[in-house]
Image (cartoon, rainbow, N blue to C red; front, side, top):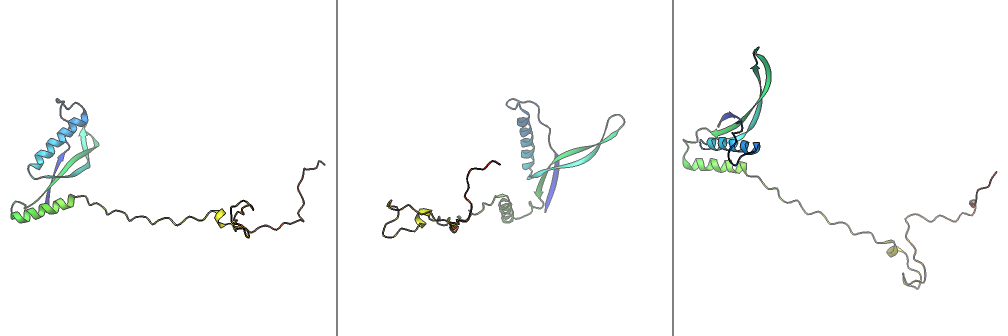
Length: 161
């Protein structure tokens, strides 16, 4: 079982030697707060924002503001536990925070063998080896050859009418 503590996010500290920019001052303020809480066994759990209504001005006009808090937690009853149980609890906490590395992805399957080139698929001529220059190489075509149709009109220059 845990108990929780919420503290407002600190405002950046004043300018100090070596901390001139806003991010450096903010980091210093957060570090100071987190280290002081860690000395009391508080673990930083996260940051939360909550809406709140705030009265401001002379007439007490209400406006909606967002309050940001740092959340700390610690285990209740850890002081009364025997040492071996405390160590076991700390090991469990450590195991929760360790990032598990995913196993490597399996190796991809190899690509299939490429299809042979059209020259390899051409039929060799009778009595001669392919590619010796006696006969032109026939290119493989997946489409059937169209018969020579002599009834089709021949194309020529257009006639003027």
